[in-house]
Amino acid sequence: MPGLALDHFNVLDLSGNIAGPFCAKLLADYGAEVIKIEPPGHGDPARSAGPFFKDDPHPEKSLLYFYLNCNKRGVTLNLENSSGRKIFLELVKKADVLIESFLPGYMAKLGLGYEDLEKINPGLVVLSITHFGQDGPYKDYAGNDLAYYAMSGMMLTSGAYAREPLKHGHPQSYYMGGIIGSYTVSAALFSRYMTGEGQHIDLSLAECVAAHNYDSATRYVYSGTIERRAPKVEAFSTKGIQYEGIVPTKDGYISPTMQKGRPTAPFKEYATLLGHPELENPKYDTRQKVLDNREEVDDLLLPIIKNEWKKFDYYNTFMEEGFVAGVVQTSEDLVNCPQLDERGYFIGVEHPVIGKIKYPGEMFRLPDSPWSLRRPAPLLGQHNREVYCRELKYSKDDLVLLRQQGAI
Picture 1 (cartoon, rainbow, N blue to C red):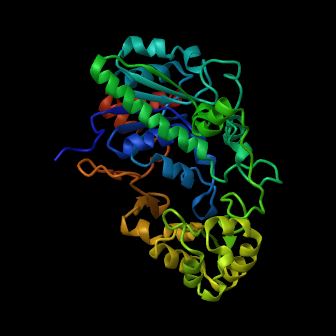
Picture 2: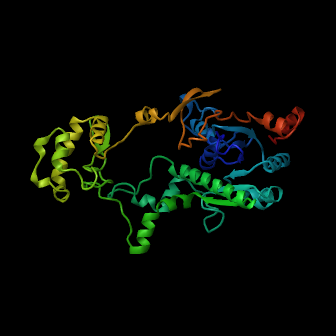
Picture 3: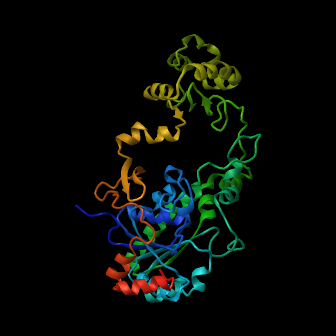
């Protein structure tokens, strides 16, 4: 039986906020030995970001930081201090991967650019995650999730036709960047296995989002068509608010459809399962007739769904009969989702400050080298002594001096 998939790789996580730490977490979850390097004093900015455990804004109680940094050890290190840079280079010599998320040029100004690091470790894979990339007219611009969605064009097609463009509620671009970062690192490590050489990966978060909006771009290139948002009152539009959009039930929202393979189910079958066989009418006996009479269909179906059905009753009833339906789950629904529960997706994690908490687990299954949770997110500087004294052979007195110098 092999060990964990990535357990022979050493990773330095010098990144902050979400994208880089999420990338490093994915590598750690499958076995990589990850050391998270944080600035002394305040640490990763994610420590200051909510939500906080029991709404207490404490640097060790950020649930965002907690989620992104489990399975890592943590040290503090000041790269703007000469002693700090010396220690960093010692860590780089032993590393396979470095993940950083500073603005372009910052590491080079410190004498820690890829060309500098390559000299002491030619096999090092460096992943640089930035807003817009290492070059180009926008390389020095600031960025955030809102900007990436707007720039990618994805926002133009999100939301209702008569309203302004809309962004998803979740900061999806950061997690998208983390996932792409983890597979680019894996590809670079595979390349190193073949060539013996590392490389510098230039990952732009704006490009990650633009790459996911490929259909709008290719449609324009081939036909000149600019995709738009769908009218909000258009029935059978998955972007609308009428039937086959997102519609209300007695206790939430669902996305109902008559889809049951191709073609769609007869209206009579749907109406019978809905509990109203009397709605059967030759006017609706083909898909096209249903579409031609969409407003009448809305008037018939939407009040029944809203007044007579609970969301999970509808979802389970119709899905069990082969129809396609969606249910809009709340956070509470998600945490108690029977499908995720059956597959053991959520697990319990014990943290020295937070205590025991439910934690999202395995993202994909590698049966012979599975995901594992080996340790909770580190406290700020928790592993300084372990890494600096035991592994780099500094003495305890050295550590005191380094701390007095502001190096760690």
